[in-house]
Length: 132
Length: 132
DNA sequence: ATTGCACACGTTATAGCATAACGCAATTGA
DNA sequence: TCAATTGCGTTATGCTATAACGTGTGCAAT
Ligand SMILES: [Zn+2]
Ligand SMILES: [Zn+2]
Ligand SMILES: [Zn+2]
Ligand SMILES: [Zn+2]
Figure 1 (cartoon, each protein chain N blue to C red):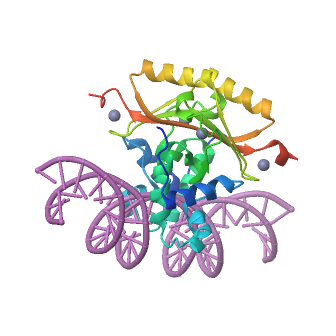
Figure 2 (figure 1 turned 180 degrees about the vertical axis):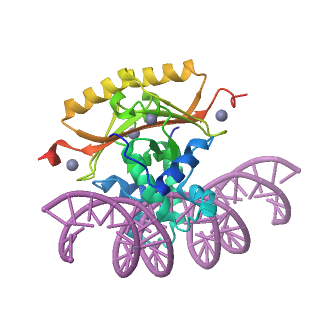
């Protein structure tokens, strides 16, 4: 998916996510954008829906939150499955790809004749800095 | 984690999950147990919390639902990471393990000095039967 | 036996996440 | 011009999850 011109709302939401140091929930984004005129959750969810479509934002299913893609311009989807390590202490998210993991999962999927639509890999734990 | 004797509520919730053909949300479980005296979400959530602890139930993060473990008695945790394929059409869930995937993810984690607590692998898509 | 503790339970209230449904305005393309 | 599409704003609603309080029961330590 290539990225069309963002609308104002999409740009505002994306900007908030890009500047954030941790994943944000839709309602947290809403709060950060009240000064810019945001009033209702749908304004955020509609923007997020498009940003996810464009591939510039990822949804972290295990924590109901969103992050800006860490690989701008690379089109994450073309690398196969995206995986995330999420520090539950500081919120830091590391986004990575592993072809071998993709290969194994896609092999399994093929063997089962299962048609994958969206695959989630999320490792929650503690990052090196927080492990103290 | 070995499984202590279940309480009445835990047994009721587990039973509903075991008989279900698809993952169930906590509120769906609640509805199915109204006749048995369940009145409030907490009755379900508290039971689920224990069942997850015992390892006899899994939570599917990407769809906010729960399933009975497909490998009773085997203690899923001892096999490493559990992965799920979820059919978005019929709800069928296939639970599987792949040592090579575990190995790759744990290798990455080690290289980053990240301390994993809980890892989620969920493939949403369409099962063979539904692919028609 | 009494006390203290741990644990499950029931209930009410509240917090947090997400979408349905309506109508309006701007854009685009026949 | 007309119709179709898309984004937007608003209100209302639904779904998911937990906080906080109090009750009862079983079981040890004293
Ligand atoms: Zn990405
Ligand atoms: Zn950290
Ligand atoms: Zn299992
Ligand atoms: Zn199916």
